[in-house]
Image 1 (cartoon, rainbow, N blue to C red):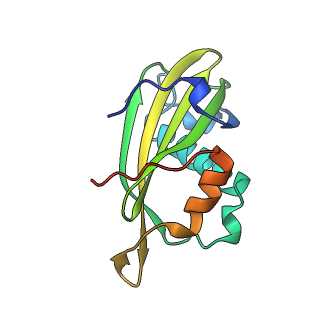
Image 2 (image 1 turned 90 degrees about the vertical axis):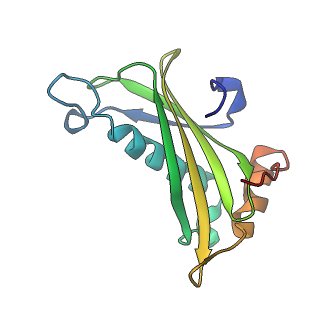
Length: 143
């Protein structure tokens, strides 16, 4: 899927504490909640770069991949890093990594596609904001 994430690859971080309702009967975070955590952190990333001034309502998740590396438990404090790895013709690949202390517990790759008038279109409305925030030009990859 992608290389093991390192904290140095991320500029944006969001802290999150695991709540009781997010764990299962075994006392560990129920696996779909890692996608919820990724969504929360991704939303905060978009807020941080000023994307809510742009119309991001037409970005939809087309693909999600999670690597589960360690279990998180109730009341764990997680630090979640978010970055955009690259862009495609109509997509953005978000890499989201979750740490408990220094331990990487999960990493997520979310491919967002921009859809307008029923067809995939370039995500230009946020690319400039991402590049300014990240301090780099997004590589364009065709998938």
